[in-house]
Image (cartoon, rainbow, N blue to C red):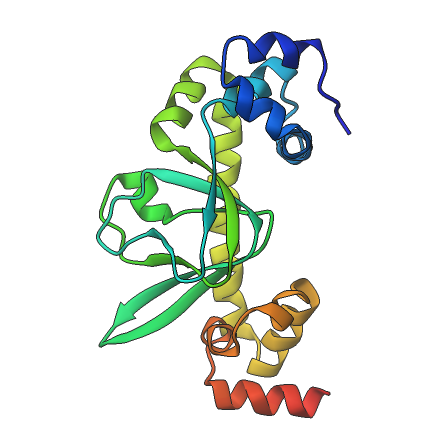
Length: 214
């Protein structure tokens, strides 16, 4: 793990000192995660920390509303969020955000258009949030941050495409088995109604699957 050193101490004088020291463990953890995408220097990493906010959510709190322009992107630290679409009076869950992943209403975030979906905390949750304007400033200043932004957008797009592939090629049982293999924690902590939506089946069908597979 990368430890905080003299670069950190120097940077504290130029940014949010209280935030940096109170969240030093989180900063080390987040730095290691970000470096999985791009080999950031310490200066490049620590410049972002005074731009971000740690936000806590209660169950039912909304991160992005329908018709709102998504001008922030988040990285989940604890708890779960779902993206849902309102259709004919029903809330249809499109996605459930795993812990330690990035999320936003991507079409809205990229095109500055009103969001057609809602992002809602489905448990007590905590996330690191940064504005699009702050990211754009980093993109202009550091090629590594511009590359990082492109990789995150690509990852989000690939995840959507992979889910579409599963819907086309797999049965409901196969999708469920793939889900519990990838996200064993979710099946214990996320309400079944949301998981059923995510898998494209009814809650009754999900209950039958769970009973048969046990």
